[in-house]
Image (cartoon, rainbow, N blue to C red; front, top):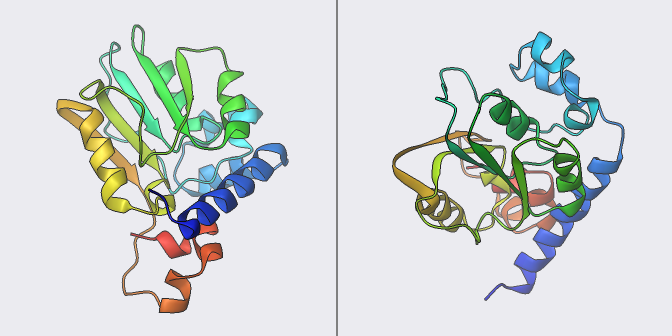
Length: 192
């Protein structure tokens, strides 16, 4: 059962990303600053790059055979889902995000991407279905890190890979940050 605090935090996160989905942002610049190859970003649809708010490029050293199932946790507008799908000849990507407005952008790209509006702490996905789970600045937004990581590992096949980029804290955060729902909305309160 979710608490009213958890419900409030998740509602604020949804509102933040719904607004971001509709805004003309500078996500392409942010993605390049975060390590995405500039030539890759330049060749992508602006609808994917404008709303980018991840922590870095996930695909260095991640090689696909072409028939994998990839689950993208906290997919946002689908930048990483799109990059993965372009590398899969017979595979598929499940893009999970709890913000419907972001998933509308994923859905508009017409690839082998299946958008799923869901919470990464409660994935309505079969156990052992994914070869790869990717998560870019997603776990910091989870209220229960244990639940989110447990779900990520539950959906992975035996021998599957979890590839994540996220905010990491180097020291404990003050209590006023940890108990302020707005701090989660800015990702700070949920840093790992």
